[in-house]
Image 1 (cartoon, rainbow, N blue to C red):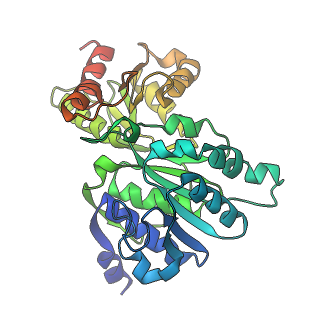
Image 2 (cartoon, one colour):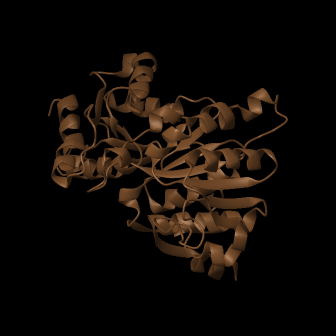
Length: 333
């Protein structure tokens, strides 16, 4: 019987369906869990993440006014009083009107209360460019959140990670920002709904090679794998690391890979200047200096706004072709 149940719980889901299943798991697992945000109740979420959950769990899934500061502020208060809220900010760009609630409230709860209170709060959002999205709906802001002590940050790149990382975030007793990719919502893959809840943190070595180390996260991690597949056809094998979590950062995995390959390429969709790739490059310069045979290279969005036109996005947003070209340059191919 246990074997039959395990097989039944292996399902092929889209990325957004995996998010829904993680939310369903949370509401079943934690009586204190709440899910709320703009259009999260009867409408089923702006992207369908809460489809059917209001009907199943009633008023534990509900809509809020269009006020990001109110959403996160209410979630911080609820978390401090024993609830386990999971809220959605429709676009990561909209975090910027609620930074006080994230930086000065959620991140500080445990510190300023000397551990008397915690903030088991999960904030979901989606970010980065999609065709037609304007400059106020296309930014990649992960570096901003990684700069805030007390906040955990993850970026799932696959349906399995969308399920697993969100469950890890919800189970955590500290505030966690989960940055999903709207561009990946339709992607589909098998995953296990019965998998154990993973601890916070940890990267994944997606493929191995000795020519270079290629590090990425979120949507760009998928582009990195595509680039590695093209390079492999010519005998250029690279390590591809999907960081998954930026805070806490699994830099040991990066350092171990660089020790084998002697070259490092970092790819992300955020702007180059001040992007999280700069933090990785700085740490590599200090901790991997004697292993590096070439300068660390970064692939990212130029320091410009993201245009709505798909043709312009195609030129600016980093893709597999840009990553492939950078790897070739680093290894001198």
